[in-house]
Length: 305
Image (cartoon, rainbow, N blue to C red):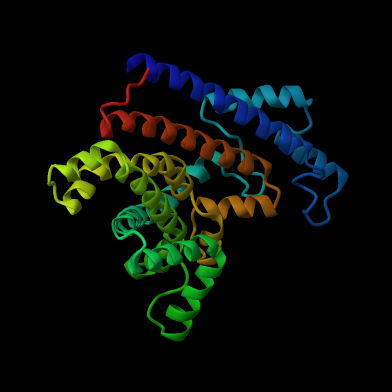
């Protein structure tokens, strides 16, 4: 186990380094610059700003400086939010996105897993067909459309829920539902498929032959093995939801990391774009390592080497 963890950590460090390197050079390949949108910028003023942010140095030197800063937890200064570092912005906005994403993850698991299990248990019956149709629709509908519909119905027409910000408990409802809609139904379909596969295994047929109650055999014995693909999906899901859904945060005007990332792209704030991308990549890597370790907890037959 210890050797496996060390190996995964080394692999994670290499992956994070490659992501940082690719992000840096791709951003510097993009035509234009972060100061082109400034109004009436003289060549002297632009040269002074480039010198301030180190953009006047050779690309190789910029790269070494940037990698050195990352190793010390410094992603540089934001070009558009003068006087604020990228690290400060990320760790200020991340808790907002994490709270929103955390609730969305809980909702997705609490509804997605039972729906998938029930659909498998009632295979080819009316409830199974209903769940399959709802799952297909939930996966197919884009998040910006579901968000708009929720706002139109519950805010504009019924005036039940606030449409902007996260000022109270009620303001979380629509963003969380919109954020959890896709993963809930994706987990349901994943769970149904996995459960049907497990239900056809020899040990399940043996359990039924011994007289074990069908409901008990499915939800006690099959569920533990069928949930492994869902755990695999949870790694990148947790990382993406907790670091902010870009579209959802922008629509509901939520001051999280996702909206900051969108704003950085539109304003060409290169340090902010690179810092957020690297932060998300590292978060995904960490969650994947944790998920791999959870395999051995959920299913003792899995040996980590």
